[in-house]
Image 1 (spheres, rainbow, N blue to C red):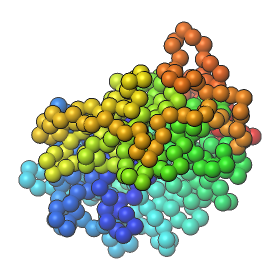
Image 2: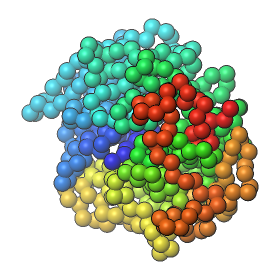
Image 3: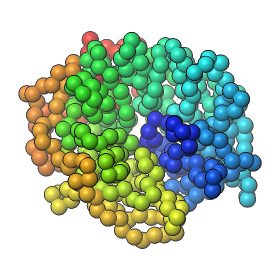
Image 4: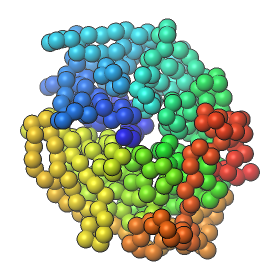
Length: 442
């Protein structure tokens, strides 16, 4: 399974903890802060059993605003608390009616204005990392899974954000770094002292951010202003073809955020289903999209969806966690519609801790978004649109396995061909000179 949580901030601007949750990379557990009256406490969800269920993990006192939680693969929950100028880390676990706590140590950020937050769950789920962003540099910390408490792994010049894992070992971390007024995605090798290599450079002056990556297929989801305005695009790690910016992902009145990619599609990046959170004038809903198609399927989110959280199974089922008064711990399942009859989308069967058998309603393609393309996918190289490379015809479901790819179609390139030393290929220092799907230009 592949899951993703959007860039982690445990509290809104007013200090109120968010209602979302974080899911382990394998989809086994989730964790969130939840409310009991005016108090907040951590809660662990178990997702890989016959039915999802939640276990509260309250401490000796309510949690403060700004507290972060992250599930580990063994079922414990990492918590970050900020007190007295220090970020304190502990592992929480259920002990009968109470909550056990294993202190891990603290990280102190002496520089004024430094922000620290947890990175998305690492592959394997045995370690957890944090990013401390100062005025002129960014530190990567191993905060759980080390031998002697929190360990300082790397110091990167510039201010970084984001955080996307590029491999299954937890070695190659992509960050978005701001230097000289531009944001470019870079790769940090955590096993080589934080050695940094460039990853995205669509145009010299463009802001190029990496949002999601799938290690199986090499599919990358990118946000860039290289086309003249900020757009969502996709590419393939290791490919020589340019980044493409589909018209179907352009929704001027909405904020579109990809949050999960279907795993297991080895050598088939165009077939990977991508889950989108769409925030529009009438609320939030779910979009389902594949690079091989020229449309976004719009589906209604389940009531109480922990917005921005979800995971794909290898079979192409999207699982969305939700919580309501009737179902305090539930998971709704959605699938990508196929054929013209399913263009508007169709929700699956929400499953809760109480065994709800209600069937979710179908989505509404007119809810502030657009259901299809009005033009070709726009490949961009060096920030210019290539009008000579049209996209697929409407309704195409991708290559058949015997038919050759049509014009403008990205041929699948395995991640193993990407220049990542962790995968046994060319040295990491040469990453910036490699043709990553037309993403790096010299």
